[in-house]
Image (cartoon, rainbow, N blue to C red):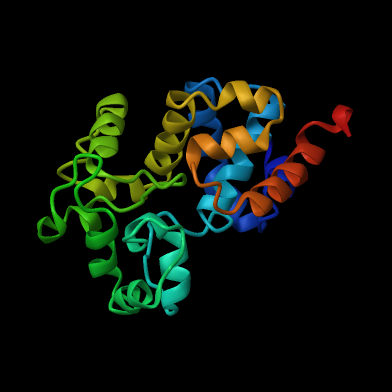
Length: 217
């Protein structure tokens, strides 16, 4: 993939494309993201997850309690009735403007993380272009890439590691097969089971596909 194609496929500035082209090309080659359709799907998903290749760490800073409760519905829907009740919204309000506390609450006791008080939620919040999250995922990713991510999770902020971690996750979760079928829904489900941001991901895929797969237009 050359610079012009990547810039157009991702819809980003030339400067941003220059920053990411080499790490992405190397990562895609390493993890068999080696056809135009796979690359279009990969670029689209990363574009969504990284805010158009501008973010490699999850902020968890929310100004609005309703949006926070919607994004992390399973954590705030305490009675599991698929609605956010006033008392649950009040709980979410306690975390508005408090990103570290939010991470420690919503990511507690899952994926190898300890309780809220352990700080694991913030320590192992999303990093890299695809937002590797939770202690067990950091461990597995680190073992695959030869990095001690449990000790130094910020290694995923480096562009090379940010790209490699994303390509590893994509390959490890079987995203190539649905990408070969241009199935944005199934690719998204493997990355975000709740399908958050599906419309944006689909739009980004179409943009990338038009550039990288002109014969399919």
